[in-house]
Image (tube, rainbow over all chains, first blue to last red; front, side):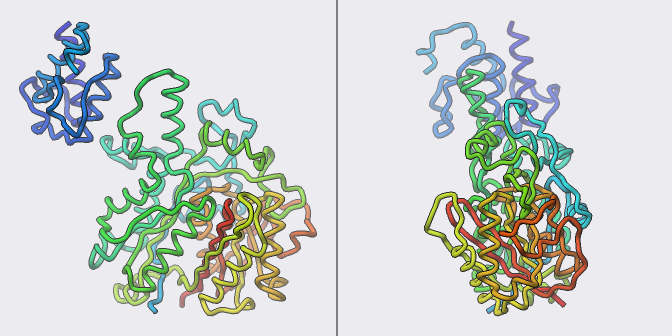
Amino acid sequence: MRLDVQEQIISIIAREAVLEPGEVTPDMTLDELGLDSLGLVEMIFAIEEAFDISVPFNANEPTQTDFDTSSVGAIVRAVERMICGEPREALA
Amino acid sequence: MRRVVITGAGTVNALGADVASTLTAMANGVCGLTPLTFPDADRLQIGIGGQVHGFEAAAHFERGKLPLLDPFAQFALVAGRQAMAQAGMTQIPGDPTRWGAIMGTAGGGNSTINDAFKTVFEDGKNRVHPFTVPRLMNNAAASHLSMEWGLQGPSFAVATACASSNHAIGLAFQMIRSGMADGMLTGGSDSMLNFGGLKAWEGLRVMSKTGCRPFAKSRDGMVQGEGAGVFVLETLEHATARGAEILAEIIGFSMSSDAGDIVMPSADGAARAMIGAMGDGGVSPDQVGYINAHGTATAANDRTECAAIRSALGGAADHVMVSSTKAMHGHCIGGTGAVELLACIMALRDGVIAPTIGYDLADPECNLDVVPNTARDAKVDVVLSNAFAFGGMNAVLALRRFG
């Protein structure tokens, strides 16, 4: 499952960053990928659509959430936790 | 006061993807109204419209930019690029804080609203695309024009339904003339040819199922179009200094309000706007050679507009040529005045008067020279462009041939 999630998320991020999936690695930050704030909300929307989840994220306080966007790998782990059915409260 | 000229024009509409093809179609009396092709069109009672076909958004915009652009903004940006190219500019000449974008629109991102409502109501989803708001806002076209060309002066959107373009162009004209700005990208854009957009129009029961026949006895309503027109306006002094080709001079503008009915037009309000535009431009009725009519082909508009023209021009109304190009490109709502200004430029510059096509039977209540069915060669010096909106808001531009 992990590889599948990671592949899908990298594919989404690559699309938003206008890069090839092969150019996106788990250690990269969104800054390094050149994703601006609009690109970030578009990426989150695409992740929500792809995994049928609801990501708690407010662009006014992007760090005040358990949905860690500090790197590509962190986003993969956050999505994995959400789709594994961890209680919503733990993430809010 | 400073003189204001048009040095660039661009358009996307049902008749053509640029000014040259649009003017050729107008001169040839081509009808751009076709069967509607968009999702759920089969559930509409109205099956025809002036739809823009063959517009490949991906060919005009980067992949990353496209999610931010409703069709009404796409049309405006493409028309803006054409206008800038014709004006011979790759960037704004001079101080960018003295240039702006004023764009008319009635529906704004109506297609985005339609899609978002469908997503949450019909598809039952609980989220919409994150750019739904920046796409649908009425100032999106003006904003994207300002961003694309670095226009840092006054920019805003004007919403006066079917008169939006004329109000926008008129305000741009006034701002340059008065010295508030040195140049403007201005015009209008709308795209309401989607299921929800047209369903709303159907409700009013003013739409024709058979075709748009302005001023004809057989007319039975308006046909909706879509598209944009964008113009480069600058001072005569500046245009001359940089050796620009001048398409026409804008000499007058006037606005009036009927203060009467929310949908029924008034001859008095329309006449006051025409008289005001002639007065502002310092011309008399007998100098006006052509009027690009609002001419929606509704029973009420055309009858009222003809009465207004007689009232405003007096005896000169017997000689003036009047046509409505809506029969060819449809009623582009907030963008329509901008598309129709192209017919005014063609009249002044090329001496070709666009016809009123679909004219099959004379109406005694519209007994003006409506240039029926076939374009006419005629030298005209001054033209008026009429726009009369739902809500009783009227805006008339006066233009003069340059050189």
